[in-house]
Length: 227
Image (cartoon, rainbow, N blue to C red; front, top):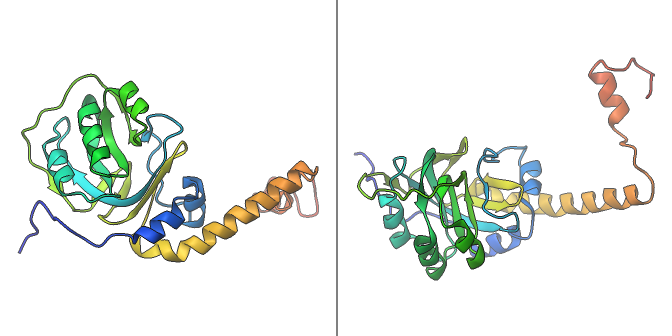
């Protein structure tokens, strides 16, 4: 039997894990996750200061039509991040101030979409986290079916409902729901290691200890040769 177009519920990342993970940068999760899960750079924060973290509530729409986004908003739970496969379309906006205000009032954590938005200045003033491929003043239609709660492809990355999503000024990273707990200790250690290295650099130790060996391995330097 085929799955329904709308899957109303699914397992989500536990709120306490979201709280722990939200303190880190998206780049930290990219590094500790094998440099996997980063959405294409075309999807970026509407304003660099915006940050979002939470479980993905996935939506697939036809380009330029937001019918299923309205349906998703009626089903999403507080703390969810709407992750919308808008096919990368920039010819019209899928959401604007009215819908973003509703998302905020519903307690959603933010919106990540492979599509465009509008009313960007008003959204910025709201302080609601929005990540998109850009803006367009054209409004959408509300006529075409799509899917909710299914895996989607957003920014070249497969996103399943309930996966962990974190975004900031650098971009958006998605981590499989089952992996997040085991990555948190790695994130903590990564932050400590980077802070230690930055302190060393400030003390004058600016040389990278791995550089010579890597240049030899790449064939740029001969064995025993240094810069």
